[in-house]
Amino acid sequence: MYVDGLHNEKELLQQIAQGNETAFRCFFDHYTPLIFTFVERLTRSKADAEEIVQDTFMKIWTSRESLPFIDKPGHYCYVIARNKALDNMRKIARDQRLLDRLWLSFSGEEDNSLENELQSQEYYQLIDQALLRLPRQKQLVFNMSRREGLSHIEISRRLGLSKSRINNILVEVLKYIKSFLEQHSALIAIGFWISSWDQLL
Image 1 (cartoon, one colour):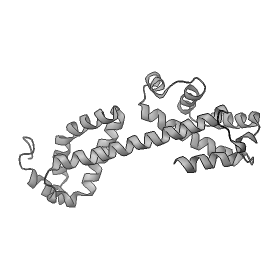
Image 2: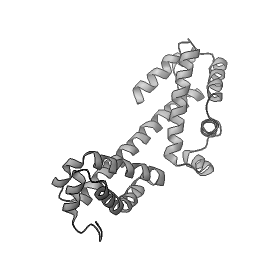
Image 3: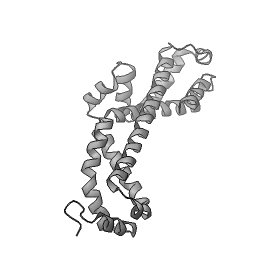
Image 4: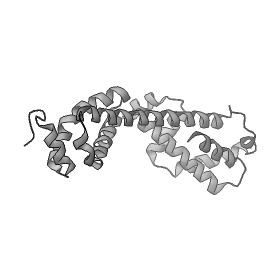
């Protein structure tokens, strides 16, 4: 029905605004390869690009009533995708700052009076207990990053995961460790963890 490079795009947008899923599928199929290439160049991650493209078209669909008023649909798609890609990169940068801060606390390189009150032996025993409760992949990623000192890129190559996925796993592990410590230790060093997350999230 809608072929040849969306020859009647205005009509197509009207159909989408009315909830026509076939019309939306045509729009999606036409723009997805273009948007994907654009986003992949920004993020340098195929996995992230796929997720961002899906989110972009989900937003377009949920806001479809406004489509008849869009003069340049292609540009509209690019702007949404660009904004979502930038949001994703900001999140990764924020999470990386959090990880860097917490790695310093693990290694004892950060001077923090609250953490110093926690006996190191019990501290690391609790962390090990928390890690044992996690899936094997999360344990592996954490140990490769924290204990082997590998970069996110090195870990992603070894495990066949995207760099952003490695980052997300590490953030998930740290959240779990914080929660575990809160439940299993009444020592005042927990305040260090809580304050670190409040400042950086």
